[in-house]
Image 1 (cartoon, rainbow, N blue to C red):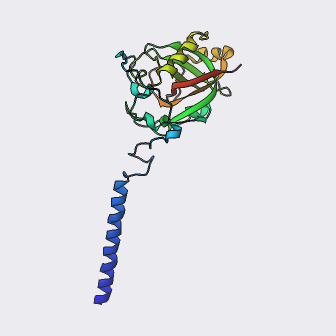
Image 2 (tube, rainbow, N blue to C red):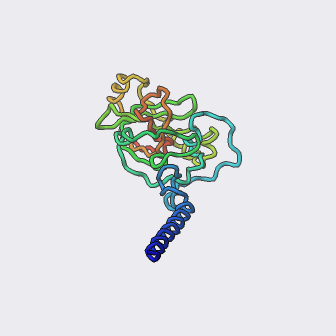
Image 3 (spheres, one colour):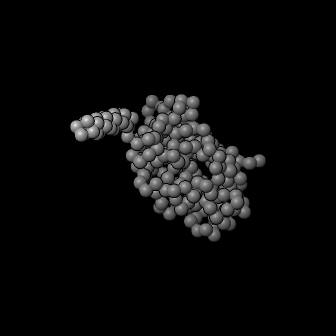
Length: 236
């Protein structure tokens, strides 16, 4: 009987020690597996990081926007975690993504906000917003009632200047300023539908971003955007 009890105790002690070791290893590894609840996205490998330029020695203190401004302008603490290799998707696919239940002002929500996406879309038009971003409305070519927003930050604004991408933002803004922005847009679906007739096809590349809804023109149901835009190429 004593041998049986002794054997049972030996097994229990071994199991306890194994569990303790597993817990220690799990804790040192940072808890949940990468991508799980409570974890931060892993940094992108050097080969797949965005090509940030050196930020200017001095940047303007001009604060152009407010909500999630650091994330919008690539000046946030998670920007090194963005995978630079573009994923080819559709406007419909982006508009169908689940919206995170919580969004931080200076942290990204993986995997959408740590990814670069490329879409072929109808450009319904664009205009400059109060925060000095160029606001572009994109529609899915096969479902023109599905729209999302893409934005190019003003390179002179704080955040965009700090991002190390201000030169690219400036070139993109200058390019659109030299073109006709298309018809005047508003939040009505009738206006957006009418804009489809004169819309141009383009390939737009940008970082995934979830905005807060505030009656934006062309906003998707989940408020997903390509923000900032990294490249735009109009079809010939």
